[in-house]
Length: 255
Image: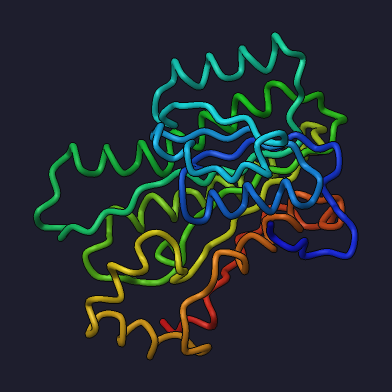
């Protein structure tokens, strides 16, 4: 079991929805939310992922099988919350997709695909989340972006565009919600190179891996836990004065 990052559990009695909990960062955030007292509703596209959920956590987690880009699934998911009279306190838009492709080789379907997964789906999921909230209820929305949305990278123009859109969405939505009386905060976390599911494969490319290490002031990749700590903080009441921010966690990436 993970050790809590705080002396006291900071998410007690909170219901948190997390997309993309099958592996990597989503899985880590799910476990750490539970460690801090939350009940987590998560979803993933793979049935195999569910089998690897740690038994000790099963009573505080409910996993759904579904795709974040499937609007029928999202509608059905929130119908379940409505019927069970479950009001969510927090949302982490974590599900996303990487895409490496030369701009010259882009087809219209490529940009539509990456924008649908990384921007349109979180946009619509967030809309459902906000609609189930009462204005006076204090909620927290976290969008998972990427430093690729902040710094230039070759052959990642489509991915970068989708993550830049998430940052802009975060800022504008936080302003709109607060101006209309909602107590819900919206923030974005931009992870740098982190040891998630693609780390081992990436490390085999010694030249590319060495290039990333040289560009990171900390001279290492981050651990998922280091991203999750901030997510827990932003979900908690301890971050009540943080709103509309995009925060890089990248070990000091040098553009």
